Length: 197
Ligand SMILES: [Ca+2]
Ligand SMILES: [Ca+2]
Ligand SMILES: [Ca+2]
Image (tube, rainbow, N blue to C red; front, side, top):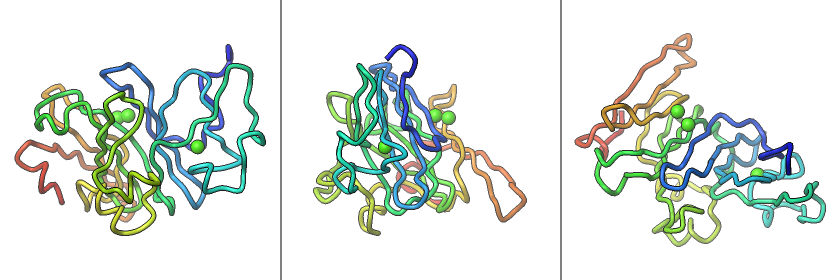
């Protein structure tokens, strides 16, 4: 795997480096059925365009994928079905919002304007969920699961998320209905539990 760090990646609008491990994570947009969050280790094949989402939910098997020497197929760490235009991913590398949020992952979308929050597991190789229905299949495919991962709503469309120099979380939005009007929101410790705009 000299030439490709990762491949089989469809329409990625989000990259982030885990501040604890230095591992790269990304998001991908499906054409219809699935958006994804992935951990990208050297040689990662995300599976496009044979499939999007978990391979167990597709009619594809791993031996049908192009896997270069030294490469590996990796299932998404989380998916949305249907696709809703997932954009940036950011690990909040600060304890300003409390230990619950430190070094955990925030993701935005462009269609619903939702801000999603994910806890990274102890080995920093996946995400963990209190809801057993989400932990089982790692897919947001109904309203209950979508609500469970949603931290904030009403952001028009989210296009960027950053940890600010002050340690708070910043969210950049883009309103398609208002000629692309943009706003920057700062998520502070007093608003993080009721972040709905
Ligand atoms: Ca990012
Ligand atoms: Ca994939
Ligand atoms: Ca960003």
